Image (cartoon, rainbow, N blue to C red; front, top):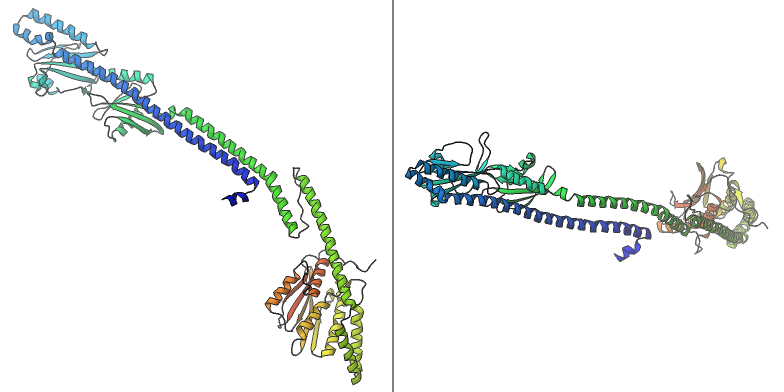
Length: 588
């Protein structure tokens, strides 16, 4: 990991730092936001449940007061006196008692703040006293069949509103056997009182309360959304209600916090919900604003990184790339100046330095060529004694044998050969001149050994090409000495010329002993060197280098296996524009 970090450049480190800080900031804010939302939800749940419990206590207190008043009335001495007045038979006293009981229950009907309807049934006297303005009688069997403990919900019939009813009996043990009841006190209040209490609760907060019964449905506040109520009821039908709890509920693309608690004494649940999205909207807006701001910062970071890349990284890469090219020997490398930047001055100085290096290397190459040419001239001026001795011995032997034609031919070819090779003036010649001296050399070798033939097939269009002097002679000499002489039997050398576009090819092939792949690859490697450090294959290396300097890139020697088992050397002369001449090194 440490090594990888060290390999990163300054630009990469800066970009990683910028985006790392942004990601760290987003991560920390996300954790903070999630923690805040969790805390707010927890506080909302606790607050909503506490409010709901407070409303529950109010409702249960009201119901408890009404039920206690009903029980108290059932045991009131004045009301119980009804059955005894029926037995006394005094109409005046009975009417007086009836009026007194009516006044008493009328007072009790409004004592809790809710208007309740209290009806007293005396089964012994068959008398009914009620706070209701309606005149009615009752059927004893129907009244007895509807009696049970606790509060009962009665749906309204027609124009009648829905009510909650409580029965108090005398004696109290008559709940198990309602037929044994002597006195029945029926207390009822309309469900609208509960709606009023729910409306007050809703007006004080953000909830939407309702009463839910698995049997009878919903009693909601007067502004309750029916679609919302239907969704809540559908959900409550599917879950066990138990003692109540907080539930997260998704309705109509909105999340609600649903709280419900059971009401003591009735089979109803008090339900309330809060739209969590509305409560958390300030936090959500702050979060969205932060993320928007972070994205803007991220965009600025990308733009800054791009500018930094274009203004810093790209110029540095260009500088490093061109320095590597100069290191590899490409001294023509230059950096193009685009616009004005902090690197313009550096690029300009780099280009000037590269130009100076290229000029120096060109001069150095010229000096090397001059040095090689000087060595070559020295070699040219020093006639190979062995070659000369062999030729002179041949002349002497032919003279003794009286073969004047052989003596004349050898002397003529030897004279022409040494006259050309020892000329130290102009360093270029036409291809035709080079081929003539090659003919002289091959004739000399053929006169000595009488085991070699040669073939020259060069079109007239190539004869006028100007090439460095003695460029072919080292190749022919290598073919004779290293290819033909070690071979048993007759040898053959062919020289073929042809043109291919802007290139001229001179193909020299022998049928000598040739070279194996290892020696051939070694020779190619030496020819490709910029320096002939081990002085191996000096003649061929010098020929290859002279061709590369005089002609365009791609010129030089190509060495490969011959078709007849020997070696093939291809002289490639690639022209581009006007041909240039090798400097005359002998001029002062």
